[in-house]
Length: 180
Image 1: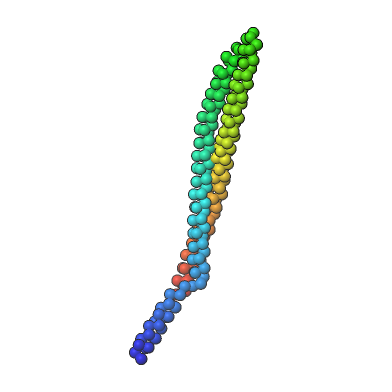
Image 2: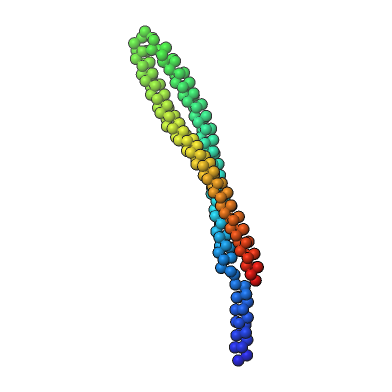
């Protein structure tokens, strides 16, 4: 019987204490609004970080492609120089009066031109790939900057809403305290 009485006393005091700590539903709503607003601000900050990363990656990709294009331009000059140097003696041989030398020179000229054309085709393929990488880097940078602008604007608006929600919560708490 003592145990039952003690447990009833304990339960009764717990319920009284809990009801004394009962939160006004209006305040609870404002607390929820503040929490949601804080979460949205954090989400906007994550979007800003993502946009910054996208911009940095795009700039990095474009810079790397630009460096590779410079190397490729030097390779093109080397191909042109090698072609000119290989063609020069063959052209002299083409002007020879000996028909056998001319015939041999024509075959050599075809071989030189075929090698040159193959090198240029391979160079053009690599050039197109690098131009695509450079363009992709530019697009990523532009996309990142656009997303950054949107995210910063959104964060600013959400911070204003958070301040309003915090003011409303403080106001509701003051009203609740005045009633008690």
